[in-house]
Every structure is written in structure tokens, then in C-alpha cells.
Image: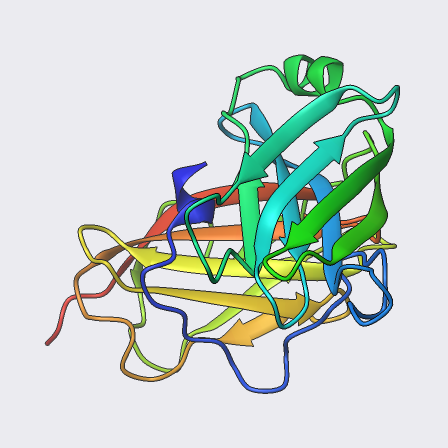
Length: 232
């Protein structure tokens, strides 16, 4: 799912960010808990691949060690920063992407995942995050249609439909051969997005990905290409 993972530049419309996609295990680190914990599955409908992603954020102090245990107390992550005085405050970890999500689900069973951390000052942090094996239903493209050509490079408004119960949507637009991308996290009730002026270029190929995000964080992506009209 390369479209979903490139992060060279973010251009996100103000006011559309939502915390719905990141289930939290604790409200803050002052009581020995992480600021943010999440574990969720992500799949690409076209590529038929899937992965698991872990996210952990401590407090003001960096983490010197982090351990994550799956249901049944099996250790699935164990990291240390023995020679760093600052440690690592925030981590995002992801698995390989096999083309059969049953492989991911077999290795990472549904249930409570226990996070245990030690900060560089010796404080212990603990928390849990729930993993579900249920994927949300995908969105459907309305405009532009997959592989549509001569799409206007100015005043372009993307449109899509989503099933009921979606918590939020992720929109990703990439230009082929360019390091630039747009990535926006929108409430699930939003079904359109106007591309900021100046991002699209005439006569260029683009890839559009739309991900539906469930309340438990799991997400399903669809993606398609489109081309802008040549300058006249």
C-alpha cells in the first residue's frame, strides 16, 4: 500500500483533523499511562494486502524501552534505546503487507494488547489498546471516476460515498514522480474535498486513495488514478 504510506509533505485543510481514528488507552502520562496508544489493521482493496500498525506516545520524557504483548501474553514488540539520553517519545510501527489478511490476523489475534514502557527517567508507563479483526466497508468513487482523463486542474472537488457507521475518512492524493502529496483526515459525514489551488498541475497523472476508518481504528482503502487536462 505505497499510496497510503508516503509522507514527504502534508497539506491538510484546517479544521478537518479528527481524533476518532486513534483509540486512546489513557488520558495522560502523568499517572503512569501513555498519552496515546492504538493498534489497528489496514487493508488495500485493490492490492488485496493488509498490515497491522501500532502507535504509542509517552509523555514529555522519551521512552527508553517499550514492550507490547498480544492476548495470551505473547510478546510481539520489544524495543530499547540503551545509548540514548533522550529516548523516543512517539513510535509508529507497521508489519509487512502480505496479500492475505488471514496471515496478519493469525499472527496478531483480536483482543487487548498490553503496552509497557520505561522512560529515560525510570518512570513506568502502562496501558492497553484493543485490536478488532473487523474491517470497515470501503468507500466508492464518485468524481473523478477511476482512470478518468481531462480532469480540471483547478477548482477540483473530489466526491465519494461511504457506508453508514464510518468514523472518519482518509484522503490521499499523489502526483506520479513527485514527492508531494495531500493527506487529509475528515469526519465520516464528509463526502467531498476541494483540492487546494496550486497543488494540481495540467497534464499530469495522479493517484487518489480514500480510506474508511472504523471507530476501532481499522481502515479499508480504495485507490485509483486520474489525469488532469492539458493546458490550453
